[in-house]
Image (cartoon, rainbow, N blue to C red; front, side):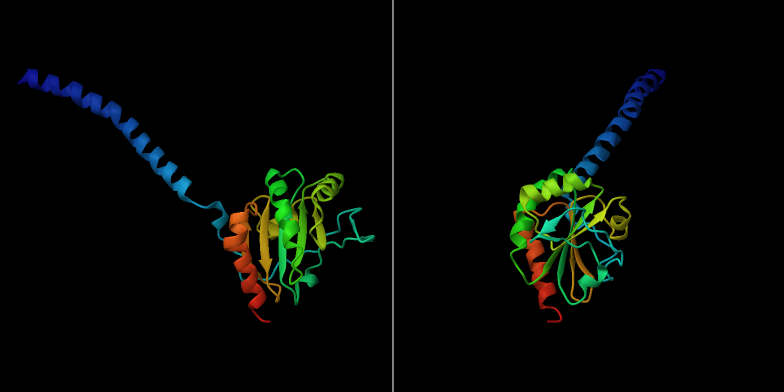
Length: 197
């Protein structure tokens, strides 16, 4: 009887030693599949359906269009117009990728494009817009990032659709891509354009 109990003890010890490894592997697989299946651009925003923040932002120093200074962000500019608000920075790599798509969007005069330049040096921001073209009718400078916090920004780039009533109707986290432009952003814009017209 004592021989049986001594032979069962090493098996039990081996199982107890391997158990934490099995638990770790199971948790690692669970996290891997959950993180891989999520779409970061679908992070919900508490601001959907609420008025756009009423924070005025100064214009980007030295930015000109048609020999006139490009105005900053004035919350009153949202009333009566559908707006696409893009939070960007020259140091943001995905912002460089989405810039040509914003330039194409700017050709559609049914809505206004508004830029919020996030924690950027004015010279760098102007160079960025000079390189790709300025798609924005207004560019507000958020030097300390406080206004972006009010907008609920997680990181740049982020894009908001603001309806005619000045209410945020959609938020895209991450860069605009040809795919999400076609399947998500343009349908949201069309919906906002059709509402209250």
